[in-house]
Amino acid sequence: MKASVKEYLVYYIYVSFKFLFTFLPKAFVKQILILCAKLAFRFNKEHKHIAKVNLDLAFEDKKSDDEKNKIIYESYKSLLFNMFEFVENQSISKEKLFAKAVIENEEVILNALEEKRKIIFITAHYGGWELAIPYTALKYGTLAVVNRKMDNPLINDMYVKARDRNNIVMLEKKVAAKGMLKAFKQGHNVAVAIDQHMKNGMEIEFFGKKVYATDSTARLAVKFDAVIIPIFAVMNDFRDYTIKVYDAIDPLKVEFKIEDKIKELTQLQANVIEEQIKETPALWFWQHKRWKKFYKNLYKRN
Image (tube, rainbow, N blue to C red; front, side, top):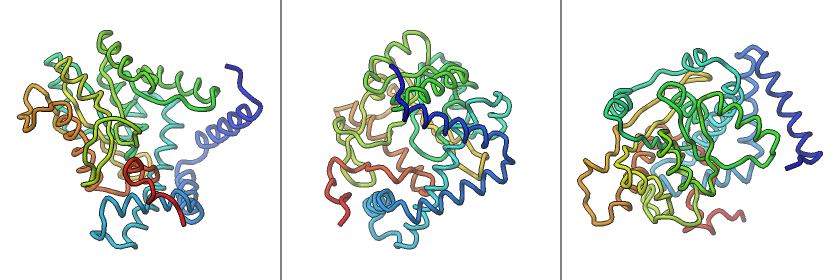
């Protein structure tokens, strides 16, 4: 598809920022990103409102407005640090990428690989997700990752090439289920972020509120006896992360409490994400309408 003049302009602006961020001292880049976070917190009223609605739904009165505002600001900072990871990890060496993180509970992944189990890595838009995916793919083998195409075809092409360089196969979100099936048959493991708003899906609870969630990971796990391994890149500081690996959700070992195994497995995955968000809430991407399906009116600004 031929790119428009506007798309070329955005592409060249992006490439210019990428060049600057690559060669500027990293301490200086960090301060620029912190300044951008402060500006976004002050002037981005729409997304600040969305984040506040989400925090009210998640924590109700368990956190004060001051605490919630601090979380929103830190969430902007985390997002911008993660965007830097998106830019930098397209071109750095595997060794430099690994140097930015340590991994906890790695034996969960190693055991699954040793047992030759198929693996579904689940994560969220949390901390350095643009580090967690290439880190996992480069260290443990090719990953098929569910992702939505970027609107700008020029930037999307750059993104796909970078993913390929980092041992990642891109799966179009619209046909994710078929893509994951194909990936398993080709001997790849898969990875998907499962924390965003969905118009349709399996109805579950998230922070005690109704949401829709994808059940494709649960169905795939049951069909292939695959293990579901939650991973999160917890940000310690700029370019400094801990890859946190949770215990595997194994459909062969789960003691199911209800007849609907798919629903229970889907809920178990959401529970892990909720647990991690509660541990360090400022690292989640609060600026999207996670509860829109059932609480649409709350997101409207007066």
